[in-house]
Length: 226
Image (cartoon, rainbow, N blue to C red; front, side, top):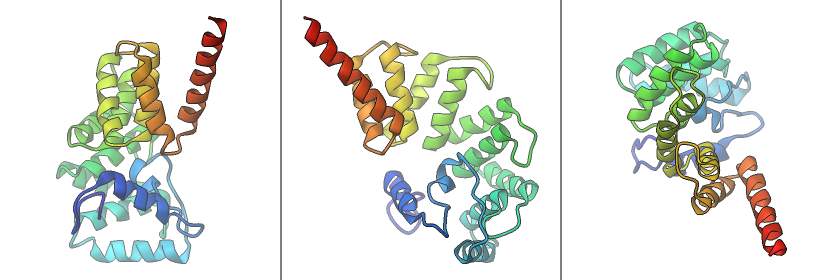
């Protein structure tokens, strides 16, 4: 509710943190309900209870429909049915629901309920990104960075990484730091590089923490040679 601004002021970063904290041994939804990096399967009592209430509310509220689709994608509290899940996500995405647009992009990217298609994935990422979804902005940046979904475009990739990083997406912060370190789509800038690495590391991003340590060691070595 906090992430989407339902009955409370909208705060995506706080919402993501609350979802992250909710993860438990018998309730593994956690942040995967936002970033769609992997599907979670569980038939625990807590998982079944979530699906029951999402199904109950699905006739009245689009958010219940969306969460029901996510449960069906992975088999969380219900038998897996990815084709049905994609159908629900399509309906919601056609209504302009940005989080459903992003998940639909992930379905096309990973072949969840549809045939893998990087080009279709990029189309849905872009729609969700333009509607402000930070995860989609990061994924669109990745697609443009690699050229996996079409033409490679490093400057535009850096722009989308920046939009997602400002919203607190740690993966985007890490990628943006890497872009600044190596001059990929942006001018090399060691200060900006370390700033974004630190912001990612503060959220527990392991690669960013490792990179900060490496950069610090190189700096000490350089000063030691002077």
